[in-house]
Length: 195
Image (tube, helix red, strand yellow):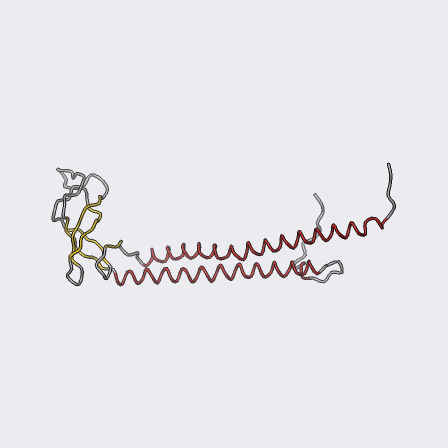
């Protein structure tokens, strides 16, 4: 392993007589890529998290519980001694009235073995369509944080990958330039040895 010497902070931006224009360009590309990566990630994450949380808050305000009645016998059985269901909830057909009084039917989760006419609480949107139970404020915050974090990482990956690609292109160009210069000046540095 080669000896590297002490670590020098901000070495890419220090003055150096051996520093070429390509080195300076690479330093600024690297700085810009990191700045854009951080900025894009934070802005996209915060914006997405805020939008998701606002949408879930609107759902909590607009969606309302309604009482629906089973229109058919629910599949499954109940324990005859305790009167409780013997499994997880099942899907069954239910009927309910929207706020405007119009009748609606659909599928909802109910206890297995529930009979026709059994009341079930369902959640509806302003048009009377079935929806899931809205998220609580703490659930909304955690979902918004998760979605915002994912959106931030995805947005940050774009300038990061673009910066890496540009840096790789600059490096291959610099290596080609070194090869050209070596081919041009290498033979001038001394005689050839023959063996």
